[in-house]
Length: 362
Image 1 (cartoon, rainbow, N blue to C red):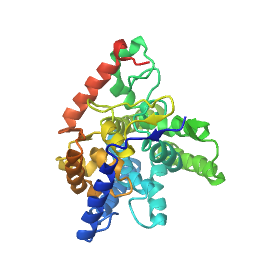
Image 2 (image 1 turned 30 degrees about the horizontal axis):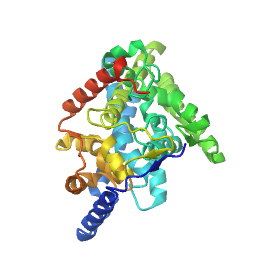
Image 3 (image 1 turned 135 degrees about the vertical axis):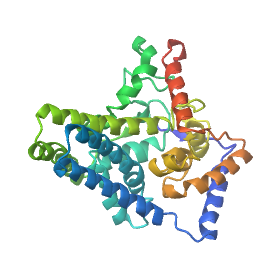
Image 4 (image 1 turned 60 degrees about the horizontal axis):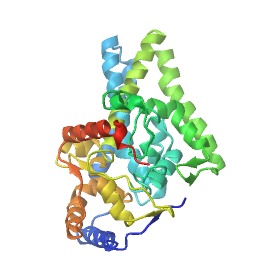
């Protein structure tokens, strides 16, 4: 079923937000793309990836030191995904598509697949946010975690608020060994046709996965003077830290108190305009925190990102003032949790709520 966004009542919301946003960039004579801060973050995080990787291989650290470095390596990979790959794949890093493509390949370097992400995230998630059956971001661990009132219920889910965070730790590992392959060869992503891919993307999928396996499995096993089980612990620790960071940041943007899960009618019509729908299904968190702004790559300004994915995330703090003001004029809620801890608590409560059988909707 094709989804259609109706919402004629508050349709002017996005036009007004866009008008004021365009005026902000024009009046201040600044680009919508990366600035010096963005370039600095890119150099920092990519530099840290290389430095930590080389320290693990050649630094001569004890097992305890290698453990700490493995945790750091996993977190840095998550931050590269947030701060560099994400913007590049959205085409917001640079006005030059070649630069975006080159930097987008950093996503492949950390074990994921740029092309699959473009389909599942840019095309599907950003269009059908929080719409059950269409937005597969709601399907984190089907049968184990329930993230919408329309998901099937199983008794084990009454405990999901306790075990979900552990499952989030497995998210990057799943990406590396399972998820990208499944998504690539799946006939539909939600209700979006996924049968036809360019031939070069078949090559890219297997080539970059092989490159990742070589760099993060083969090379360490050959170079490091450790046993296979010691290596396995380090590899898993790296992915657990990366997965937990990724899982938390992604879930705090859509699965918290106050966000909606609109169900289209029998003809596929969603009652609100697309931009209003984004406001109702998306939440910000910790927007006043320097650390969150720096590390999360604008994903804590998820509202602004969903409205303007083609604008580099370093501009979102200023854009949030515009969006908040116009939303107030149109009587649209601006959903946010003031702190990171507050957002985690809200997500925990939402998991607990969806873990109850009585929240099931037909």
